[in-house]
Picture 1: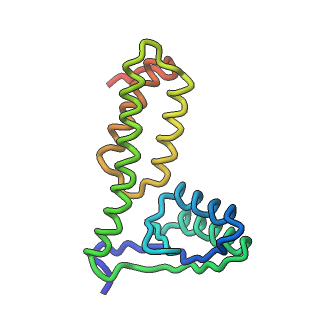
Picture 2: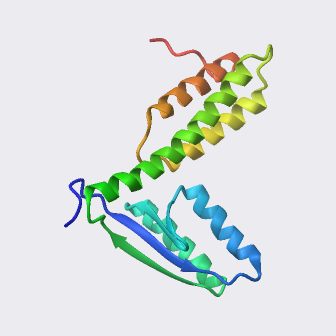
Length: 162
């Protein structure tokens, strides 16, 4: 039985030779940037949409180029609990990333002069996290507000009128 939410997932099952290690590390980094849920050794998942499926297709191609094997699957959790656990893993990972950005923003706010370069870097990181955030936690909006306050202090944007 498919879970009640009906969320489909795209799964990538892959194996890469241990040597040379460079392609294996490149694939691991790319998967990390995509924000995958790690289901097992060599098995990752993302909520299915055209973008995530294409991204994992590209990773599969990268695996093949490294003389490895990769298979893409479309699946649904067989229970609501399994799906909640999978979504929970993704939410927990994004929550931690947003919390780190918020902490960095608070630290920057205490400086007399807010370094424009640091604010731009923080805003870029925020956009990267948002791209892999499929189930936004409340920390997402908190991180956005913190980045906005910094951008105003640094003179990068005008303060929004509410």
